[in-house]
Length: 129
Image (cartoon, rainbow, N blue to C red; front, side, top):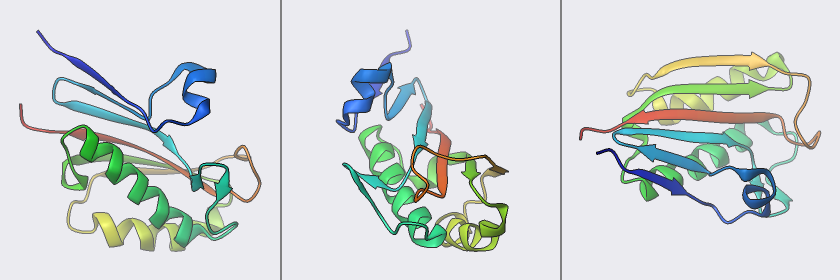
């Protein structure tokens, strides 16, 4: 039988919307869309590189709670408000995933919940059972 583990970051949105920061189901871990919010504070407003680095740190913490690490990431999805930020976001992605090389997607979107947020990231990880 496969066990499900819901991982919470404790934000009010998880209860209001009904989601988890991450879910581990068997050996698969899905991390929800993650932005550069620390509580109600936006980290590095408008700075794609710094936001991406902060986001990956938050994702890494969720993966640790699921008994995994960035090395276990097999897929990243990056939603950006301006595709012109691709180089800076890509540079941050390479800093953390350059040797791991997960499958990756970057998509321009019309906006996030606050205009100072410029990137949101989701990941899929898989660990050995």
